[in-house]
Image (cartoon, one colour):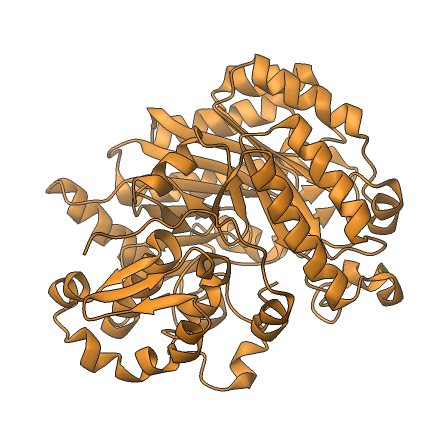
Length: 470
């Protein structure tokens, strides 16, 4: 049976179903998820994984290479933020960080040599554009010297619209960045003041127009629903304004209020947060609004215009998922550079130290900053294949999994298949003798479908580590 690539349904999502399935669960940018990383996976374990890649590259067996660079600095704090960041207006602090980044890049070059160039490069944060043009040029030069960047590579950067200008975008394009993501979140002034992130619609419109004129291959806008002082009506206005700007991609995230874990969120008045019913109304309204503006629903929280590479990949069954979300790239080895960065190398995951002092200390001693990670077991690899097939293609074929992993799927996953019966009764999945298919309606609940195959989600206690699905 041919794999299905679900498209956005012309249906109204049932509020009762949304409430019933709105439970804590992973986003599955990896499996196992990062909360399963252990400190036993250290810098030496990471070095071993790099050497195994280098050995594979010598015989032509290494997968494509992706690079992620974490720039932690921000000039001001956004109260909703859960990212690893350093709030400072002292731009001179970047100098020490760039020295450490270059040393970390050199450590990788020493282990890997100069193999095939990277096909993906992503600058995240924090605020990557905290760095000056000269500083960004310096980092790009280091990457090109150590790894190389393929001529067709996706080179993306996250941009804070409050500190960017069309001239800055022109500089980024000249450096080789061809994809840009603007953190919008919401255009309503009351909401912006409540989360300490004020930016006008006109300023964002100017930047989007400039990025389009400069020929960026993809322009993304991030939105968040569930923020303080939001209402279904106010968020509908933001959705309409984004529709008018017509970015190539839209990422729509649900705000998770976890003040015990993220200190900036303690500045948010919980009494101003919208009730659960209002949040669901915002989600349903946003989905309907973006579909009405001609966007394709990619999955979970991503939308794209029909001619965008992400939408094309979904239609053709070539969608993939990594630590940055949905991607058109096949499974890559990912090198995470900088404080708190996460990487994937072969059948391992790794994460750098989460604080600057720890990161600087490790790099200063000439060793990798890896402090935790994971070596995937055979069962992890099997379940990752199943979960990613559901998350990306919306279809798992028993035979393909059986051939790749040498298991009898229906026997091995009998309990998991049985646990999907309630979702099948809701019309969210279809189960037959050949596989499991996520329906058009079920595509909006794909996290709940994937969770059935997560071995680590045994009991409610494990699930409470995660944000809610909606």
